[in-house]
Image 1: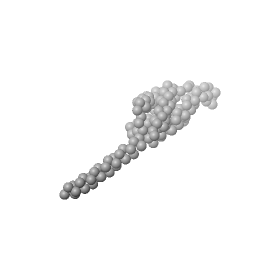
Image 2: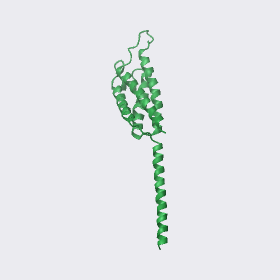
Image 3: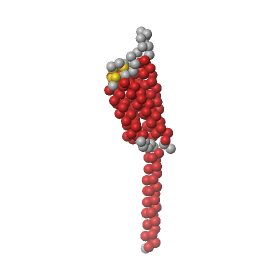
Image 4: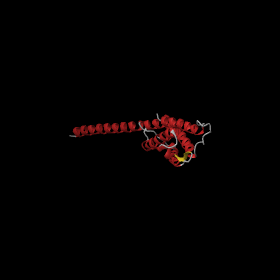
Amino acid sequence: MSGQAGHADGAEDGRNVDELAADVDAVVSRAARTVDLGRRGFVIAVAIFALIVALLLPWVGDVAGWRVLAGDGGAIPRLFAATSTLIGIVVSALALATQRWWLAWVCAVGGWFASVDGVLAIWSQQSTPATGVAGEGPGAGMILAVVATVILAGNWMSAAWSRG
């Protein structure tokens, strides 16, 4: 009888080891798909908040950023409003909440694209229109949005590269 009990205990130990190995594999797989943001997470959250505030401030003349997003204020500022809102606020908040590595890369690449859009949007507000009179310049909201977008892009790039 003692031989049978020892055999049963050995089979149970084997199953426990298999279950433990499966649990370890699941944890390793989950860790491979995520990124640890650490202090960057706080900086990213503050930059997202700054982008939200920037949408409430003037971008083009007296036109607020949310109105530029809705279609007022010109094509280049509208493109920047769309990319900074989509990548800088929506996707960044999703990536911050889920900490998915692939979303960190989307935010990094999209953030740099939005940053270039932002610089072009500022340039478009300083350029000379067809009348030969210089533009009024970018509003405080647009400048804040560009700075926040560059900060987001840099932090997401750093987070995406740090994995591995």
